[in-house]
Image 1 (cartoon, rainbow, N blue to C red):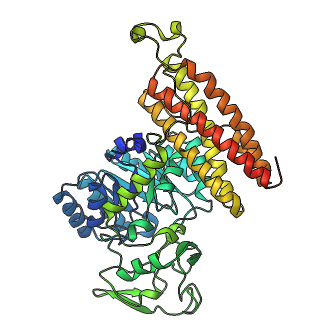
Image 2 (spheres, rainbow, N blue to C red):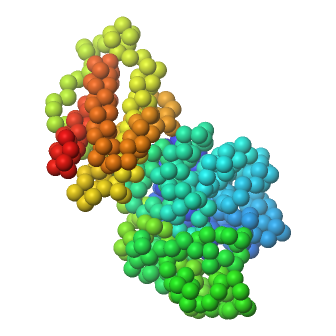
Length: 493
């Protein structure tokens, strides 16, 4: 149903849609994981510092619902070593398909899990960690941008970190940080990610184990209501930074987080919840929820209601697929058939003037690298654009994301490997600090892409690909005219 979204990582994880629910501690229990998996996505149980009995019962509950493809999220640095060993042993005994690790990269642990046949997913915040995880034997990387809610490892924005990791790693790279909707998924796929990891959006679902207070605060908040702070530090390594909704703690109304005696502000059964703890409000808790860690990513302002997890997965997928699809776009000019007489498939492609498969894959990847540069430049430029250009730049970004998806699928469907690079356009464009000059440069390079497509079209045998490339050409021509008109009104031509 959402073939335009499918990427190779889906086969590795055993899902049909590259939408993942983050393994949020406390929040991601079997109800949420089962709902996401049942809708075609993939999800992690959030088992950070949880007792082994809970891991056993949650895995049993999932398998009782017929869910056999899922993961467990663990954070070694935040877990007592004895408990961590018990957790790892339990996951291996239970043959948990995938384990996600976060924070410092433990080569010994990654190697152990890899040798046991477990899919190892490592969430990283910079290129050094990514390289270490890859060397140790990780199967999948998650690039976490600083926009993320909860514990934040990265100091880079996702739009900067993601292309860096995609270009340097041989592993599938997923993206995390501020993602909430289909436009986000389309954007990160355009930048080379093979899927998106959504956190805050899934907290605001019916199946999440988050307390209703936390969910209500999410749908009432905007991006500017989130803050990065080190005040929620109990149970975590020194210097840990989290992104939460501002509250009395972050406003300094509850005293100094690093001095004084511990204050109980809630309970989960008999277990006390302390002020400045990393605990977020759960259904099973009572207490002063306002003073707890209300984790939220920067995308929170686009969450407006509580929905089921299955509905959220389907909404994200449908929105992204629509942005990446050209099936409903009517070409502005007639599309001529690329195929000669019906017996032509018996004739050698090169003899008939068509590109061989390998030659076609090279040409498509060259277009993909250029299109990814356009997607990345327009995404980076949207935040600094004045009101009269902001909408146009986002429109062009969505078009670039669409064509990245079309080209990627065309490459994958022919048994090729989609390039994970951007071409020189990105670096050259971003050197131009003046936005108008940058857009002028992109328009100039867009002409080159149009000429490349025009030269490629007569060499493409496949009718469907010929049609899509023709529509890509028309889209570039239209966008070029729109940008030229906007810049003329901006005092440039």
